[in-house]
Length: 218
Image 1: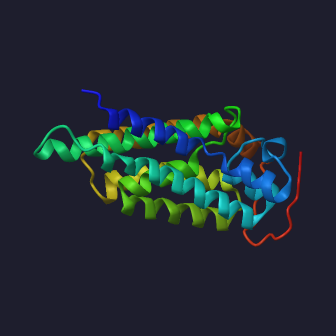
Image 2: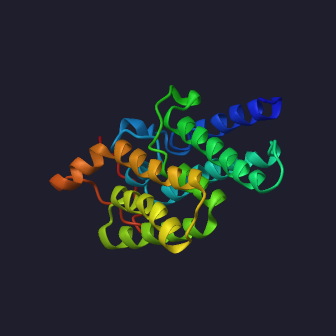
């Protein structure tokens, strides 16, 4: 049965995801719409590229918080069953609300439905659902970034690290979590298609964490 709390949680999850952090921060503090520069995406990666490390970190943190908050709205719904099935249903609620937040990030109602790629919001969702796997993902992200300076490649690597870690490191048997892990891989490949093409051609922009000066490249 669909409850008022469930409907409210779904709406809130989408609205949380729709907060266009990169757009609002860029316009408010830099007078720049990041969607008009770099890759044209309203996400942390393009903010790093266009506005620099400080702005990129701020956008990344808030976008992660968006996914984490939306996913944890499941606590306000409560499972409709009892016993062992309650835990599985709770995780399903978390996954559903997290995915809705990611959809909000991809198609934000507050920014003309032109959003980012949802990687940071996805990570916030993973952080809420499986904290240990999230630590593995962030470790992979940082190692790849420090070695290659490609945020896109780091994001792709971290995304693929999630299903591998929950299967081989943590031996998770919850089917919905396993399915979600595979969906993450597919989603990341789809949203990073242009990045993958540029990586293969050697044309992908690099990001240096200690870069101080913003550089606006159209």
